[in-house]
Length: 589
Image (cartoon, rainbow, N blue to C red; front, side, top):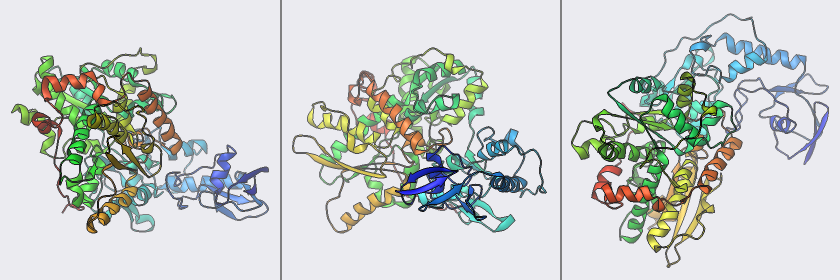
């Protein structure tokens, strides 16, 4: 440990601790714009400046490591004046249309301007007028609002390893744009939305589809059906002032009914369905000679997009099972509508997701019209529209619904009730753990003694483990989250394949976002590892409290197979619940 002083108070910290982290240990807030705990600091904005006692020299707290006997002053009139000047300079080239900005009241620049009491504009206003890029099906780029903090570039390049965004030009003409200044929709972007989640202002945001949902809700000729994803229930409460990780499921059901949705289902149910299909696929691949191993999960659309662009040679290893969102959409129109006596052509299927890439997934290929194909009718896509957690929160507020005062309600049957396995799909390792719970049963015809599969849990970028089925069958698994971590896993597979050796794993889970869907690109802003930890705890709380914790135990899952699908992986299930993949170009010409 080393000894330092901050604002005349002594503190011991580990070597390498930055000044900003040391200050936070003492509950001292140093203002930041470019800094984010998810990203490597690079000192772009200069707002976090501090100085040493008895020295006029100022340093940037985000990237300066503490040294022995360092005496740091974080706030004094001179420092505050410099920070104010930096803010005023940033504001001099930033638009003033806060009332129309999607980040109004959740904008870090707006918050700092209020904290510093900035009421005048001492510098001439010069805004670099740049067009909005809305070519991407999930993400909108508004470059004139960019403050050049670099967060989006850092997360896209250093964290996600996608390299769809970069800085172009210098000085006043500099801007944030997609690679080679191509439209974002033609870039390598995988629509994960981490750029939007990390942007402190309104320069990047999700495509807003709430108007289409409002229109459908007001259309008497449409029967509106909504599904909510596992991770939404442990994050949306933050938008209403509750702590991260608050399990908000039953109040969400109540709020959705008050918004006017006719039928409410839960994506956790179709996560159980996914486990049955994917688990059966895993068992089949393990037992059939020559089947592509390892099996790689396909629930995350950003990962699917990445794989088709960067690792097309792995397509044979990809699970053909659709994501829970797409399975639910297909089942709503192909199965539930007939059961409920509703014309499937009148069904308008809405999905509430923590993920911006889900907006793209609904139109990924013609397999997303599987209900229409099966029934031979013009039903459009299985899922008509996707809104994020943030969009749903705005809709609830617009409708004047006091959600905290609502009594708990239940989802509709038969595609509402779910197991604990369905809910843990929202966290990294959850898909793996849920699949293992049921794969164990499918192989041994026995229930696991302890269904908590700890090797899949935690925040390590890559987790490895082994599942012992107790009958001589053992499989090695890997779990990767945060797209920049997946290369290490896939390169191991390639090396083994090229050397003619058996693969190092038999089953792999991948999620594009750090922590999994609980930190997806459409979740409430401001996510950190501490918030990820709280949301994850909420997911496991929901799992632990569930009556059934394994997907194959869900009586309603068994009902839909008996009444409609036949058997997991059967002919009808394959037509409705599975898909194919193709190699995609990184750049669209």
